[in-house]
Image (cartoon, rainbow, N blue to C red; front, side, top):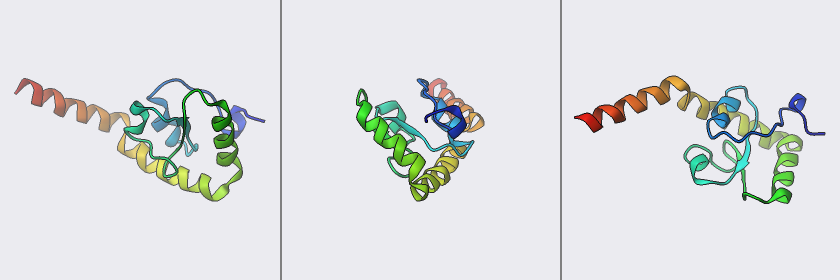
Length: 102
């Protein structure tokens, strides 16, 4: 059964994967540009084709059943979450803004 209890929940925000990764929740996400900025298939997430419910179902099952894969995703996710936390994101934005006004 898919539920919040086993860490599976729908989400439509591009910001949510790093937040979930910081809680050691394996990520299954749509393979879209905005998420590929920080998600890497089978390193810190399972990426599936958008609008492909069968691929999504297979990936969800893999994330729950394959403990080795889940451990890899959790470890990669935690590293990603540390790199993309709110403080780091704010610092990168400040740098960009400084470059734009210089």
